[in-house]
Image (tube, rainbow, N blue to C red):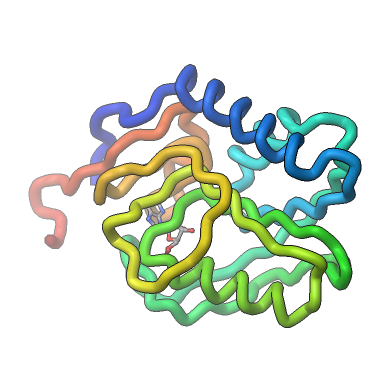
Length: 180
Ligand code: IMP
């Protein structure tokens, strides 16, 4: 795969992340909120997002690492927990922060698993959403950008572990000779 055009640039990302932070600040004002980052893809987004949430929300951070069985560009829906949360979320307001929702399989599994732990509430914030690829319904309360069915990298998202460090979101395309 090779890096292709910029789909969303740094400036657009910054503006949208600020808007998301404002919305979250308004919705959780005066409350405590456990922000859960899904490793590794959500790390860059989460670190910008939490700095856009006001101080009158009592934010704490936790992380979960999951791996979905499948090939490099497709998920199977079977999710394995590589790293679980450090703290209990029982009775807490929870915000799951994801890099991208594609088929929705990973997220629907995660939401179900969180709900079994009896939090006060669970919401989802995803930077990107490929709505047209959805296989299972999953409610995303805060969405950065709805994007077409491209494979994208940058701003935390990877292809085979690469390109997470790019400040913008780029499309990747197959190189001549790559498998279809
Ligand atoms: P889903 O279970 O199909 O919704 O897949 C979600 C996960 O697949 C994301 O958390 C990403 O790790 C990965 N993913 C899906 N689409 C892309 C993409 O375009 N670029 C990078 N990772 C992606």
